Image (cartoon, rainbow, N blue to C red):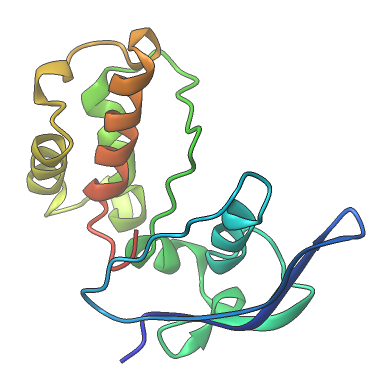
Length: 160
């Protein structure tokens, strides 16, 4: 079974070709690293794979369906994107920032039966339990990076 697949993916930005015919198949349990020089298109590729940038050619599939056909909330339950320079713009406690990773899982009236356990586990995995009550906008860059990773993990995505 393929979790995420790009087939001949091409992306143009401002009329300039950034990616040209990139194909990839990611299967459950695999860890993939994208390596290349600055400006090679690694971030553009990831953004296109999660549906944040439209391809100029080719396709991206998550599971059995093209990424662009997914309901965004349902896609966010299984596919998490952590940008390299993730920012926190509001003075929220760290625990609340991590809990934002559970938003796609909330049902009516904000119910999320697994939410508390998922947030606690993500904070442990991100090694940010000791930061729970601190204000996220007051953290160091490294602390903030760990908090944002914990936020992504809190959603328990199939693909990060």
